[in-house]
Image 1 (spheres, rainbow, N blue to C red):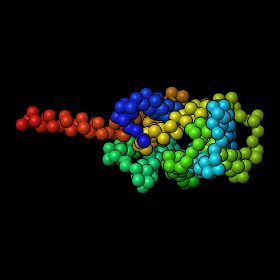
Image 2: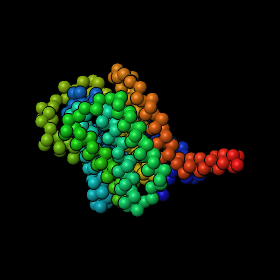
Image 3: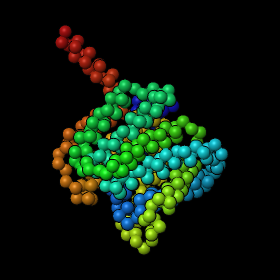
Image 4: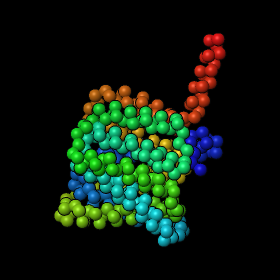
Length: 317
């Protein structure tokens, strides 16, 4: 059963929940910068496809070393769907949006629609989404919109379509991974990434002219380092943590990373990219923190506020 922080604390699963959230909050916030460095000398679709094929092969080897059986025919189909939506569809649109000059402000705002899409699919599928989660999601989007004022809101029309399509694909893949029959986690991850990555490589060879002209000699040391970081930390570590959250936490909790990642990306840009803050971040951060509080610990906060209000009313009388 999906858990929130109160349930996790009661059943002794609070530590893995916190660790998984910190991983997706912090590491995925750095991948925006890493993607830009990797694409400086690599074609985006080829880079993304090779990233997931490599991670998928490693994960499948780990799964087999653990003695896990290969997926059934139905599970191969399900992992192909999830991998196609997430590793291929969503991530390909992310790299294309960045390559096509999507502004960091627009990207930061659009990515926060993912948990709202995921919550909608979950509600349509019969799962209960608490009112506090909906309020938190709305606050998170507002915070990201303010945060967007720190960056460049310019975009091309094709880049904009990719930016809006990415969280839609990601939310559909996330929901499918919760509902469809999947093999054991390590095997599921490996199969999803390998199949999604192969789709990406096929698209690169068919649709990306730069792939046909690509040579390993043109890749800079910085791009190789960024690509390895994306494979190891961005995929093998963090995507596994996210997939665990999808199976063990509520949709709002699992998707809450999208409100934190833009802020982390902004600070990474300041530290590594020489970006300058204008001050909007200091207004956005309280909104993001309030959103996280409602999403992660909404019901207890409401109960606490109700008790405080009742006591204050009684004292006034």
